[in-house]
Image 1: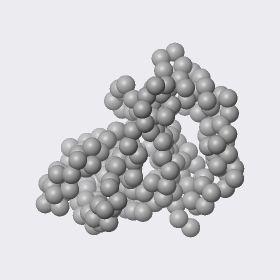
Image 2: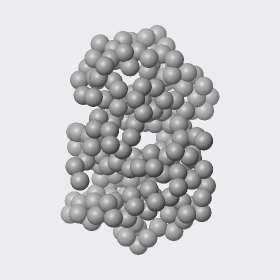
Image 3: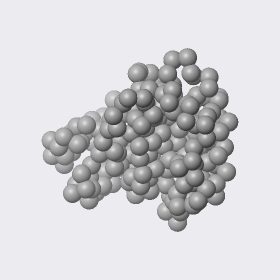
Image 4: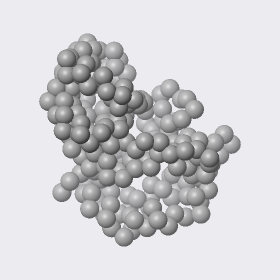
Length: 225
């Protein structure tokens, strides 16, 4: 069985925070973790709140076949009135469904207290093979030499939506890959290991591509519920 992930970040419009959190806790999460193959969920808050990506949720999926089930598809095609209302009252609502292609170090689980460092990419298909090889064989092994860097899973997109919930906001380029790094401390981002990983010739070559420079990064901590 192939593992997968469901991930979304969003920001409620001011004044709609309570209904946003109630909906997530009482409807969104229960309706998904009740499906066979979706094992657990965890909510997060951005450590540096800004105008977007204030909150995030990550679902641990043990079998991506659940994405083809009628029950899962119905959640997408026939959302409840409350779901429609909440999404209409978000500044952004970016969603990603993916299959795991790389896993190194500690495996994520819902009780993990570590920080979640998320990096999103929109990689042209011609670069997929090289990008994935670089991440798996060079980038991650260097960074995981740092004890504060606990692990990483990378997923390739099966389905995604970008900012579809914001009234009047145009959709953005879809993510093709999302990396979820588990950090024991934000200090990992200033570690010598990360500096070495970012200074290689291979990364330097990839960084000349606009798609690589356009990657988006956020650090999230578990949301106290």
